[in-house]
Length: 204
Image (cartoon, rainbow, N blue to C red):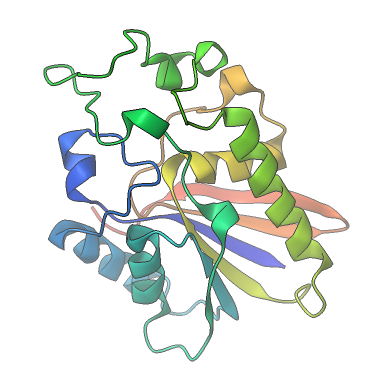
């Protein structure tokens, strides 16, 4: 089994440095352009099925990558982005920061110290649900020889990789959030997932 992971294209909220989380924001023009360039880079990959977060930005990215392939696009709740609860829509930009928690940037800089917002979700839970989905894929009949695309989000994608790499919470982000439309590749062989490539972009 080969699994391609992609972070969705750019949205207006990305550009404004606002927390999106579960907010259902669509791609902007530049985001669609990046997805189209990525689709061109992946045009020779023979995907058998696509699973996507149900949020518009991930779904649209998945549909653009699918192109003319006659394969299913399946909505999967466990690929949805981390929830920021009451902080969704607020800005973490240096000049526009308006999040009630003055230490919110621990989310990026020190995940082990991150305080989950009211009605939000923890790193541990995102890792748990994405890991359950990866495990389920290995148990589905007929999937062992498939090539699969997962269209997801910055934090959820890192959580998927944390399951594969055994990454601790303090090291969750590694070298940082993947660029929009960056692609990573996993291979499942001999009962284990292996990371083949991480964060490749098909645009300049």
